Image 1: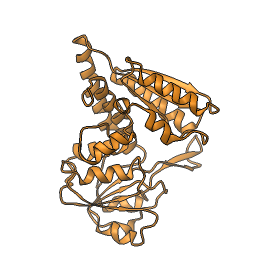
Image 2: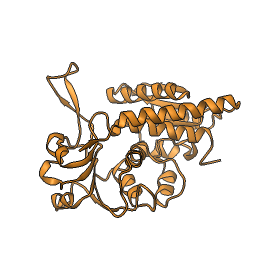
Image 3: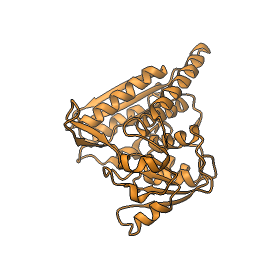
Image 4: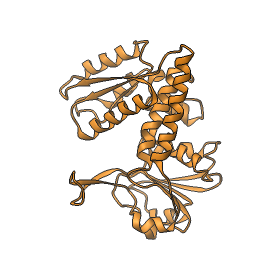
Length: 293
C-alpha cells in the first residue's frame, strides 16, 4: 500500500508555477492576478479563502480579497461580479461557495465571464470539458487527475467507480476519467444515494473515487485487493483528540480499506492540497490567456 501524498505534489506544482511566474516577470509580462469574493463569515469558507490567498503569494501571483457581509443583496453581488468581469487587471476570480440562502448560486456562477471562471463552474467551461475542449476544469477533479498522473497510476481500460454525482466533483471527475486521455480511458460507473447494488459495484472497481460527503462510508468489505482509492471527503467530526475539538474525516474508513489498496489518498493531506493548487494552475492559464484569448 502506497500513500498518495497530495501535499508533496501540491508543493512541487507551486514551485513549478512560481518559476514560470519569475520567467514571465523577467520578460516584462503581466503577473497573474486572482480575486476572491467572500460573503459572510462561514468558518470553512474563511479557511479556504485564506489558503487560496497564501497559495497566491507562494506562486508569485497578485491577489485581491473582496468581502461582503451575509446580508448583501443578490443585485449588489452581481454588480461586483460585473465589475470584476470588466476589470482588465483581474485575470481570474472566484466567488466562494456556499452563498447565503437569499442569493442564487447558479445566477452568480452564470454571471461570471467564463474566460475568468478559474473555478471551472460556468456552464460553458463544463460543456467544453464534457466534449474534451480546452477549458478551466474545476479544481478538485483536476487535482485528482494530476495525482493519478504524477503517481503513474494506470487508468486505461480500468473500471472506475465514482461515489457521488455532485456538479463540483462527481460528474466532472467521471467525465474526465472516460475521456480519451491519460489519465482517462477508463470504464466509469457513477453510484449515488439511489444506487441499489452499490457494494457489488465497488467490489468490481479497480479505482474508487469517493465523493459522497458521508464520513467513513466506504468500508473494508466493499473493496477488492489492489484497488486504488481516492478519498475526496472532508467532513468535520467531533474529536476529543484535537485542540480544535474536531477532526477532518474522509468518506473512506481508512484503517479497514488501506491494507487492501495499492494506492490511497489520506485525509487530510491527499486531495485537499491539490484542489487549491489546481486553482493556481487555472489562474496561471488565465493570466497567460492560454485557453481563451
